[in-house]
Length: 311
Image (tube, rainbow, N blue to C red; front, side):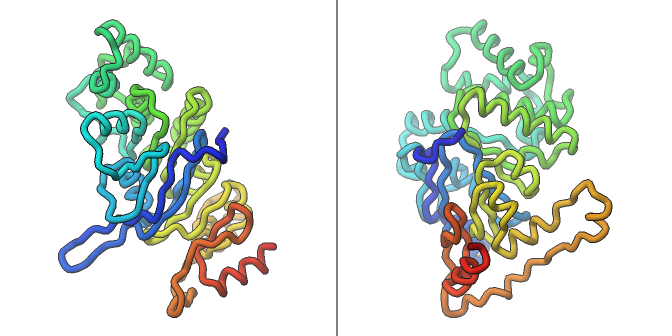
């Protein structure tokens, strides 16, 4: 369970701009949110919304254009020497979308998993190293016979389990899971998500779970931030967001979720989001708290309207 008083990650006014010749793409545009220790914070949005870029900026795969990321009281993008960077890299790990592309095809599974163990000197000798690898394989539902195989010998679901074992090898506090199930069959997706939940409870992990599928994000997340064009447009507890969506973009995402009910599906109306419905000519929208813990990107007039509608 998360501890609301204990912020592990603080993202403050984060901006990530990319210049492509004459144009500047605002991939993340002034994003602010906190992640509490022990919780899963879901970040959801369609392709190009900036959610994966946010994850990469938090873990410093990108140097942020502006803003701050504070991890356990330390500025992630502040100047760090090699020793400090190494310590930081051990505490924060990432699981990637494509489990095949993120695993070196020429390395055996044992060496892939042990990479972090070797870098951080966590094993005293070869025997201890292999025991750690075997334990990690067992932890993610594989067995020690898998250690001597290569990535291409595994299914997509198994490869993602190897990716999770690699992330766990350095005993991190925080894991960014960037679309970790989108490349997997639906039947395998639930297995991987259930494994992640189990590991979280056993090891006290904190997750940032990035996805475009709101139904799966709801299942695993304590709180959810909805991203659109580089901005968070809505942020609330998982059930609150699902049951009382306020921003029209969130409503459009929810309307796209299929349900195993033929009658419902026959009559389901997909809501199409039209950004031109907002009039922000005289006022920049801000993330405002409409209900306790429920924030929406809106103008002052929209804010008053939301308050009336969602008393």
